[in-house]
Amino acid sequence: MILNDEDIDKAKLAGKIAGKAIIYGRKLIKPGVKVVDVLDQIEDFIHQNNGKIAFPAQISINEFAAHFCPLEDDETIIKSTDMVKLDLGVHIDGIIADNAITIIFKEDNDKYEELNTIKKASEEALKNAIDIIKPGITLGEIGLMIQETIANYDLSPIKNLSGHGLGKYSVHEHPTIPNFNTNDKTELKENQIIAIEPFATNGYGMVFESKNPTLFSFSKNRPVRSTYAREILSEIKKFENLPFTTRWLTKKINPGKVKLGLNELKINGIIHEYPPLIESKRGIVSQTEHTVIVRDKPVITTLIDE
Image 1 (tube, rainbow, N blue to C red):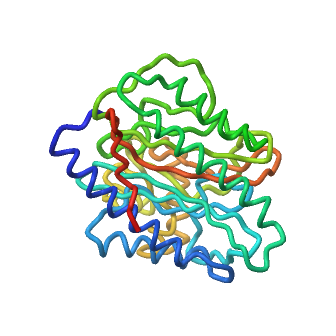
Image 2 (image 1 turned 120 degrees about the vertical axis):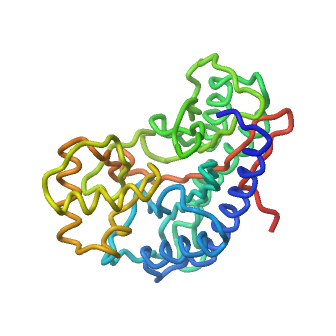
C-alpha cells in the first residue's frame, strides 16, 4: 500500500500505540506469569490508548515461531529458560502497525548465552535491513542482508516466514519481504508501508503448521445452517475482516457453541485458520519486527524512544 498524507498520520499514530504496547508487554512478561493473562492485559492496553487491535496479540515460545493464541483456560506459564516472542498489531481506521520482540531472562537461566545469540541475530538482521531501506531497493537485496546477518551468527533465517506489505484492514499483502536472498528484483516505492520481520533459529530454518488452531480470519460470506454458526458469524463480522482468536468469542458465547460454530464455518470455507507454526527441527526461534514507511530516510512507525 502506498500511503497518502492522511494515511501517514494514521500509520504513525498506530505505530506509536503499538510501540508502547510492546514496551508494556515486555514489562509484564516474566517467569511464572500465565501467557493468557499477559495477552489480555496487552489487548486492554491497546484499547485504553485509543487503538484498535489489528490481530490478536500472540506469545510464541521456544520452537513455536508464530500464531500461538491461547484459549481462555490455557495454563501455559512462562519459564526462566524460555525464549518468548511477543507479536502484536494496532490499527487506526484500518491503517496498521505490526511489531514484535524477543524476550529472554538472565536470572536462573543456564541457556542465557545461547538464547541471547539467537535473539541478537534477529535484532541485528532487522536493524541492517532497515538501514538499506529506500525507494528502489529490491526485495532480494533485503532478503540477502537478513540472511547474511543471521548467518554471521552461525544460525539460519526461517525461509518460509517473511515480512510483508500492509494494506487497509489487511495485515498481509504484497510485497513479501523475504528473510533470505530470493533474487526478487521487485523494487520498493516511496511511502510504501511494510513490516520487516526476521526470524532466526538454531534449527533447520523452516516451520510447519501444527494442530489445534485458535487464530482465524474471515474468508468469504456463505449461507450457514446452524444457529451456532450464524451467531459466531455475526460476531466475527464485527472484526472488520481482520484476524481474530477463539478466546475473543468464548468471552461472549458458550465455548461449546463456539467450537461447533467455528467448525461449521471452517468446513464451509467461510473462515481461514492459522495453526501455530513450529520450527521443523524443534530449533529455538527468535523474532524481531518493525513497521516501516519507505523513504530515503525510512520512517519506523513502531520505534519508541524509551
